[in-house]
Length: 317
Ligand code: SER
Image (cartoon, rainbow, N blue to C red):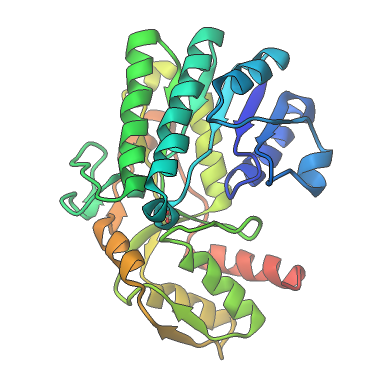
């Protein structure tokens, strides 16, 4: 049985990952770590233990790990790409100083650690079409710099100290539960909210801009499946390309229009978001994840669109 701590449990990924892990491992075995100002609410709060765990405070992480006999940490604390450009020092403090704290606690307490990387770990010189697992990673965003460093530091702790670190490079994640905050791929979430509300969508990304995207249930399955994978099969660790769909704004717009025919879009590219998007892969090659731990997504654009619209309509957003 695993005892799990999620750092960043009230964020975009954490809020759903916590519930999914509680379903699989039992409510009492999954601790939701949060910071003041983003307290868990509703089902997330009621269904299991939660603790204040600030990733920038190593002693707080250590205390919670000891108190709950934690053996696995999902470290999800991070700033997304656009907001990290306006707060680069904070992005480093949370992403890398925080990761150092997590890895040190993991080393001392023999915990496995999952810390996500991203399509943002690639940069303009990376091959954009079918981005290989092992390739050039020279991002020019602070988000990307922290993600490449995350990959290197996690591998370092594995090779040097035997800490069981594993990671995936998440595409843009689309969910109907917790909104992302300040990412380049947020438009692919916002577009559904506009469509369901009957509003015209002002798109900050130019038509023709391809980026990898993924529906949240696949992202959660991927993270959990990798952490459960047989270590003897893993040639890579930090971090695996995983992919399920790649599209440009006009393609997701057309998919939504099939369900909501009078939906309208207008393009007003945001220079920062557009330049970040242009530096990221068009689509990644995820064959290593498929071969080493049987990664396989379930949702394509049509299936995701049907589910997103149904769920958002049911909530009368
Ligand atoms: N969703 C992230 C962002 O846009 C990328 O991993 O910042």
